[in-house]
Image (cartoon, rainbow, N blue to C red; front, top):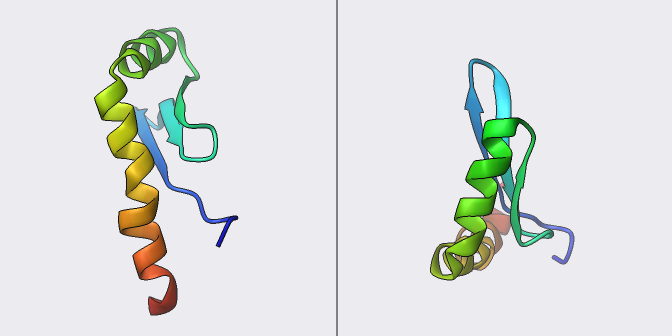
Length: 66
């Protein structure tokens, strides 16, 4: 169960702007705009804590379904 990860990506016009990976624990930006957004979102500690908790609440509870 350690290799399960929660990923939330944001795309615009088929281009990935930002990605949150539960293994990394923060947003990573892939474009100029995405880097700015990632820096803004990473400053919000409650939002990041909520996304980190999504791994346990969403991923780990649905492991046995598939």
